[in-house]
Length: 251
Image (cartoon, rainbow, N blue to C red; front, side, top):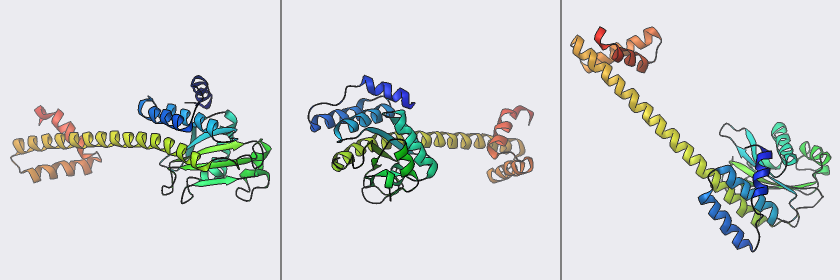
């Protein structure tokens, strides 16, 4: 989902209202009922902007298994630009939140004079953001984490009054959505790999049986015939077996 699309979706969703408890109950329900992880992240993102004091714009950073970062949802294109700049520089709160031990909280009260982010900070200040807070996903988990929940304010010290505990709870909701998706993807991959392994075993077994029948050799000898053909032809053993099984009438 693009940033613009996530913004449209967020506009359609009602801004969380009422007590904090009611808002978190609603978020928990979204975790169970939302059809996509992006929808969950979008809901968390807009809830974060609504309940964290002085959060001007909010985004979610996701870290891929290969270490690359991207921003699946953001309240404004401006927030995504701030994220991408961090990815390019390999410096900034959303990047550091994935690497910081403990709760994974990273912040800077005045980016124009940032000691924490000396390269990204001044550039971000020129773009209009002066203070920042990011929380790693999962909070408290071991780095490298799967991403970060990022808060941007246009004024210096703008996030000093932000409730860190609320930010951590919101980050935990986003983390759960991402972890569920990751687990589901891993499960699908494992199933696909298992199916491939079983298919390979079956076709190799068929080829061995054909060779044993036609040549009167043992199972070990049949396997050695297949292995030698695979090496000599520089073709995967499974492909050799599949070809042999498909042409059994000519053998």
